[in-house]
Length: 350
Image (cartoon, rainbow, N blue to C red; front, side, top):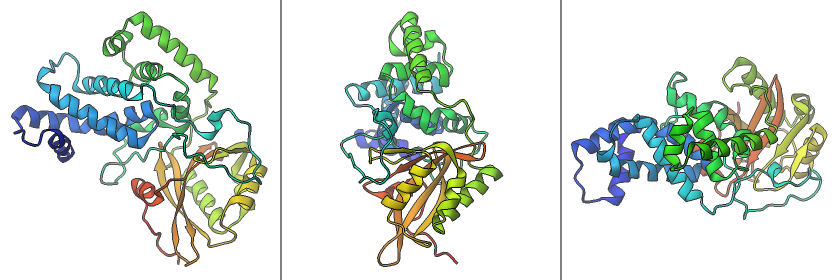
């Protein structure tokens, strides 16, 4: 794991000889990398940006480790650096919405899809996974912080309506459970300013009307059974079975297309009119995890009969029903699938 830190450091200090303190920092700091990544992802709404922000955080921390006095924990110190790195990077940047956040009404499912690549869309977060693709130990504190409701898509999307400093204060106070005085010191402001920012941030999050219901975890037997039924519905092109799994007000959206669709009738109409699949066998779906939620990589059969990466679906499941489907397309879908531990070509069905 320390190889990544060595690579990061070597990229900016190729002729530097690593000291005992450097090695100590790399050994102590590396276990927090996934947690810092989750924090930077919440702040930025982008996995690609978060990875760059983590690299910058660790480089700054490595350079400043000699000045680390230990009054705060190394974890707290890294989060403090990461937060300020994020605030600098986000200055002047546009927020990353989902289609439902653009303010437009629901779309006609029979109309042509409108792609808007100029919008910096919200991106999904793999996992929780380790760097080598294995599922993390659920008892690991870093995994717990990274995989709870604080990275669910709806919450990260709601964060996009906050200013960068409001995001920082909300995350440090309500997710990381810092005291107001600690947040004020980290941001170079006053406790009164922190409390004011927090009050406004919480109000805006309430306005986002996030569901109070708990999302189903991806690894329960009930969730696995529903996901398998969902897979069967697509692979067998059994549209009627999909309808039975959706709530009456279920939402379907799929950036970079700007439309969104509410209710089973609209969603089914969208699939029939705007999906390349026309019958059984055209689609193959493989399960994964995104933002701590059940997700599926959908492969579409081409003219040559080969199934290739097409889209990533992230499901909100509450009380045995699908309430929201966020479908992600990418310029390089193969690379997107690789990040989620999905193969370039699925194994042939027997």
